[in-house]
Image 1: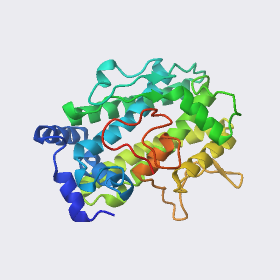
Image 2: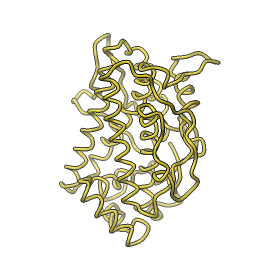
Image 3: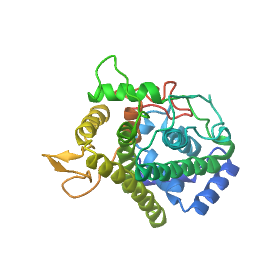
Image 4: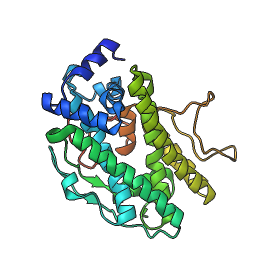
Length: 309
């Protein structure tokens, strides 16, 4: 684990240059997201993530923020297609690195007015996250990498035992499939921000982190509750086991335990689980080992930090 002195030095370095750092801090203050200014940086500065870079001292603020932006692209595209039938605006996808397409996105034929509204609200949040990171990074922001929604959800469903070999899983085919896809992402978001909390010392940043974690938890609890009410516990439990097999963290729980509802996944102290960035990449790359691409990112992430495990 990096010491406090190293973390402080990491935060004090520029994003890509002095202008980018000023832009980032100004944007973070305006958005009320101090977490990104320090908490998220500290969260990213973990042994698992440092191993993904040529050397710990080479990690810049910009590289760390771009890691987060890559992940936000995925969630924003997933929900945008589900709700609107189209992805992010083109002017929100360009940047440094190779810009890639999104394979498999399309609109969901929502039958429930409430589920459509839930999806639209989450889609708006994810859009705003992408906009925030891009504004904070300025010219240093990475482009949206290639994202494969179609094949990756089929691979994930196959690993979870939801389908058999030779079958496909269309996450946009209906509301139930959409909810299962959302479940795959949302619990990961909660555990990712939980991993940030122990690394934040500044109370202002900790307050912002708590707010962001609360929003992610609202998203996850919403998806978990609706899935449970619609009889999706068995499939969700299978997805949970598959996630656990990928990250090795045992930071997962399904929708039921011993036949009883389990909407809030937590430990024996009532505390949410956490994941390191490397473990998050194990899930989105759909691999339990070290890799620089795979799963939802067939060509990997743009930027310096792209290694799982």
